[in-house]
Length: 226
Image (cartoon, rainbow, N blue to C red):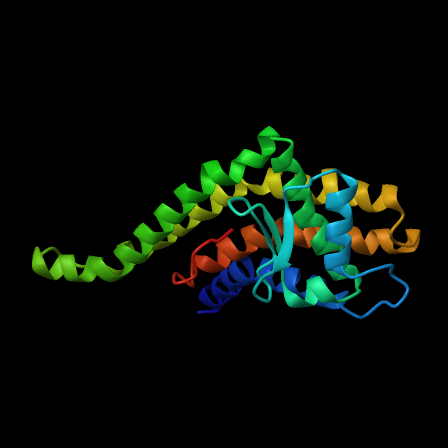
């Protein structure tokens, strides 16, 4: 019995731990900072102008749904990031601008999401279909229904989704550490003592989608979005 409980705790830590860590880091540095030169939205617009990206706009997104909209060529920031001055707002804004820069330059790394994310969505939707359809098909076709095998198939499909989203991780890492961090250092937008904190936030930004994918194994109604 103790072994099963320990296994359950390990699985819960695997599925929910990364997401909890990401949210904890982002919330930890949300405190207003009056010494910062501008809000996340102002920084995003400034960086786009500084790097001569004229065809990309900055607009509001749903809370917690910060992303670069490839089709609309718009950096979408949640109201908090758009309007507040904090380390989290600055780092998230710079991360999303990093995506915009990569797409503007047509870098190879910027194509990972458009290549792999649709596959992840198809597999995850198939997992949802299997979740509800398998018992019905078993009854209609008079096949023996085994909950254990059913569960293993669903978890396997979920893990496939995670592995596919891991293929997108280099794009997220590029936006954080090849784009955002060098821009923030070069522009001296932050005191040097804040850089270790910024690195933690940018790591959380890079891992956001992998963490969400792990949770999606258990929460099948949440599809990966970008």
